[in-house]
Image 1 (cartoon, rainbow, N blue to C red):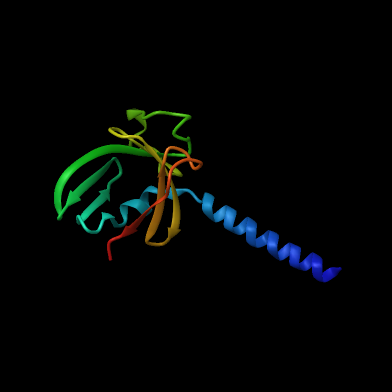
Image 2: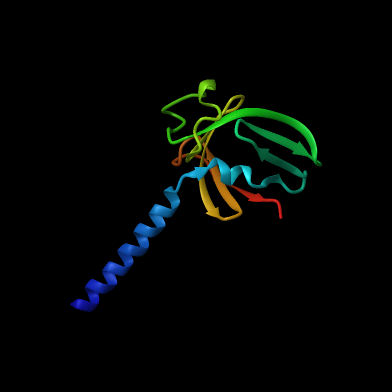
Length: 130
C-alpha cells in the first residue's frame, strides 16, 4: 500500500510540474534577448524591443508593429495602445496590426504560439537564431 501511495505521489508531482511549466509566463526580456526565426527558407526573422516587433527578410527591414504582453486572453481584451511597453510578463502577445497569440516556453531558445486562445488552432514553433 505504501508503494502505491508513493507511486501516485510521484505521478502527481510530475503532472503538476509539467502543468506549471506550461503556464510559465513569457517575459519581454526573454523575447528581446534573441533574434527569432519565423521561416528559415525565406530567411524571415523578427527582433523584439520594449514596444515593437520588427520583421526582416534576408536581414532587410520588412515592417514593424507595436505590441504588448499580457496575462489577459485574446477574447478578454483587444489591443490597447496605452499598454505598449508597460507589461513585461504574460502568456499573450497583443499586436497592433494583427491579432493576438497565446505563447508558451519550450526551452531556453524556443517558444511556441497559437493564434487566439490555447484551445484553438495549431502550434507554431519559434526558435532563436543560433
